[in-house]
Amino acid sequence: MKMDVHQVIKRPLHSEKSVAAIGTSNQYHFEVDRRAGKRDVRQAIEDMFPNVHVLKVNTLWMRGKPRRRGYTRGRTKDRKKAIVKLKEGESIDIGY
Image (cartoon, rainbow, N blue to C red; front, side):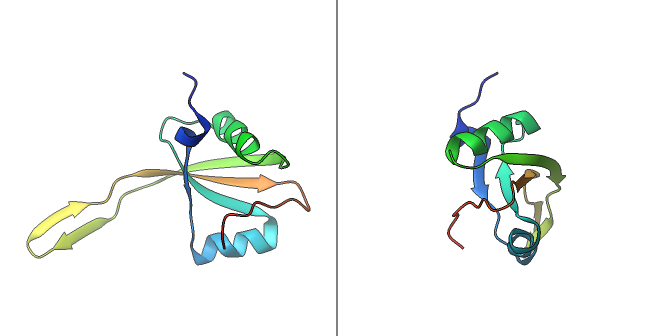
């Protein structure tokens, strides 16, 4: 199944760990579609940002966290995260 670029990459993830990884090892964190594989993520990043070359893609599942509001209990949704390593000297402008 061929997915559109904007279906594969949902949003960039912004946390202390992700911002530190950009500076130290040129890695960017993205939330991706649950059905997307590493090849899909690589192709989507290279299509969205034409002057970027992806060296490595790591994917992992982020389990939902338990949440409570009053007596109501629930969970956040499980998500899939991709860590994309770029060639030395290349960068992606994602707003932070």
